[in-house]
Image (tube, rainbow, N blue to C red; front, side):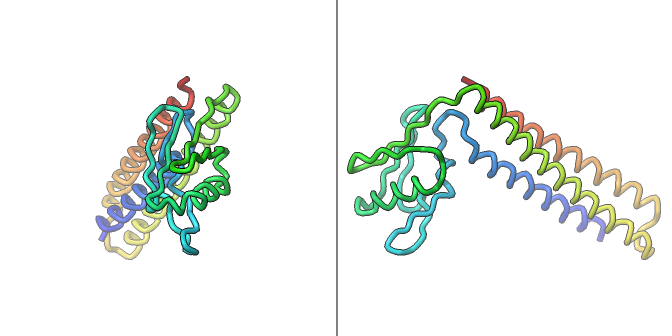
Length: 185
């Protein structure tokens, strides 16, 4: 029973890290990253469809993304979807592909992005600590119900804390890596 609590908590902590990675993938780094278009929905024949399902996205240069719809008829819909996605990008349509030029970030914008990254990271750490608190409370309930002893509670609590520390370190490492990418010129 206590092992299942720890395993479930660990899975929740992993999900928190995955959410952080997904959130940080949307942060612009000054380089063209196809991941920034993952959330774009195109109205394709009246059905909202993810852009990645109806077009190929490539990055031939560091500051450029090229979006090529599989169906040429969807070119205008793709362009409109990118414009309305609020990505601060201006799509350039040449009739066959859409080019997205990423302007270089200025120093002030880079610092704002680093603040955002730190806020996302802190939110993840708070979520991880909340998961730890839930796990410890469940263990205390088991001890109160005489399923585990007080010594078991102490050892399980220490194991939970070690896992928590490990996940917080991973969160910091992910955020630090993204900060480095943003501050890189």
